[in-house]
Length: 184
Image 1 (cartoon, rainbow, N blue to C red):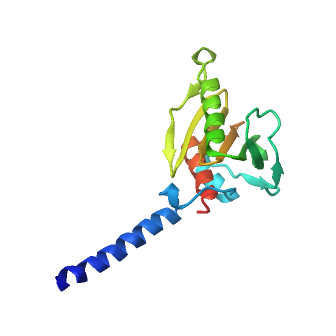
Image 2 (cartoon, rainbow, N blue to C red):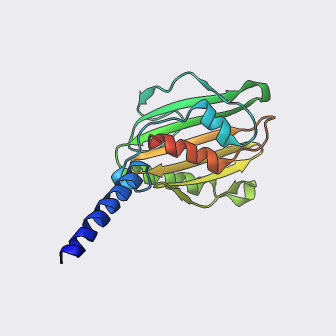
Image 3 (spheres, one colour):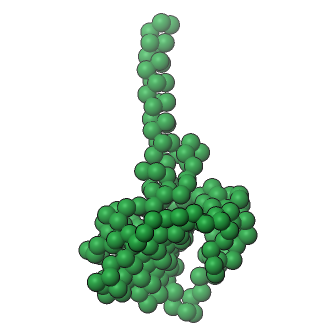
């Protein structure tokens, strides 16, 4: 009996450390919620995957209400940040939106996926992908790529314009934004 207790205690401690670590790093969303957070210029440049350097333009600032031209209910506030490679006329714009509830965020995401699934316009749309609790999709047309995702009451939108810089790695760019929103 004492032998099994001696074995069980370390096993429980190791399991708790693993679960806590996974939660802290955003792999278990119920232990760690997203928040406003933006990747560094170096992280965006590396994630873009096209060999260019994207410099952050200014600092993110929080705005109340909904961004212009974004028709969704339940928006509490938003932050926006741009990363630019002026030599190649290429940029990445990251918009993060906080909703009053998770259902409002999910509803706004559903509207976007419905809007952009139009095959006759030649738009290529990726299927839903899940990464660290975020569900996201992307679409691209004529050198412009957009990715959108949501988790809990937060949503991100990424606009990537390739200019003369070559194609972006949409998945890596989306994931670096998600990591920043989890504080990683």
